[in-house]
Image 1: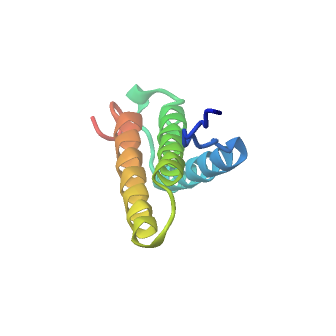
Image 2: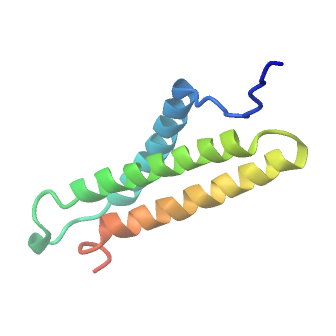
Length: 111
């Protein structure tokens, strides 16, 4: 008798994961850049106060993109589940972007 391995492990495709992370980080970078361009800083904030939000917000966007990929990858595709995954991914991305914006702007614009 032979033994069969019935584990259902899924392979993570790094190219798809990196692509989704980069797209989500780029969207976050564009949004925070549009938000910060018209703002004049106060002297007590220092010269490079915009660097912190320009780093933290895209990192939060990248994390949201990774969560989106993992949700799609782990929960699978198909019918209503695909719609649920898309809605859940958008909600997770928006919440992560919001939290990243708060962390990035804490101490400057949102003191």
